[in-house]
Amino acid sequence: MDFCIRLASLEDIPKLTTLIPESARALQAGYYTSEQIKGALGTVFGVDSQLIQDQTYFVAENNHQIVGCGGWSKRKTLYGGDSGKNNPEDSLLNPDSDSAKIRAFFVHPARARRGIGSQIMRVCEQAAERAGFKDVEMIATLAGEAFYTKFGYQAIDRFEISLPNSQFLPVVRMFKSFAPSP
Ligand SMILES: CC(C)(COP(=O)(O)OP(=O)(O)OC[C@H]1O[C@@H](n2cnc3c(N)ncnc32)[C@H](O)[C@@H]1OP(=O)(O)O)[C@@H](O)C(=O)NCCC(=O)NCCS
Picture (tube, helix red, strand yellow):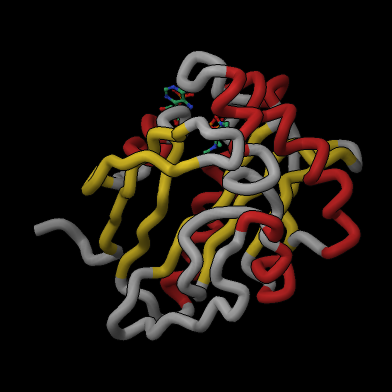
């Protein structure tokens, strides 16, 4: 399938706000209950417009339709959309001592397993490395874990995020160094 990757703009937010629930409801169905997904949408799963403003968030387009999104961050926040952020200041990281973050990857269910997530990931990793970061980390969903493992990320912690509807979302903290393995 032909698709191109470009930086996301604030005008994309309405389309991203449609894509993210479609992706989560279909592709996370084998990993989370519908109640967990419902509680995570809008808070844990959502658009962080700071990433768009920082020009670190990307969309994949096919025939003028957004079929995937994902980004990286040079800021402290690990996950969450605009309405779920508990750190409005979201200070910048130091590339010499902090890990860049991988953030909010979602692919349209009809376009899954066609390399869209991989292509966005390559663009993000290259950009984070160019910005001087030596490693990257993320809070991954259980649905995303196999994808990130394929890219060399290692699980370093497992915990649950408390959701507004009293549910809990099991997630995994994953890490990758850009240094070549010995
Ligand atoms: C995770 C996600 C972004 C991957 O996007 P994608 O475009 O389907 O991924 P790719 O086609 O680039 O997959 C690359 C490789 O990752 C692995 N992979 C991807 N999805 C996988 C899955 N569901 N199960 C097992 N391996 C998977 C495979 O090795 C795959 O290569 P292959 O298709 O040749 O076997 C997508 O499944 C998604 O949007 N999931 C729902 C939202 C979500 O939970 N996102 C993670 C947030 S942290």
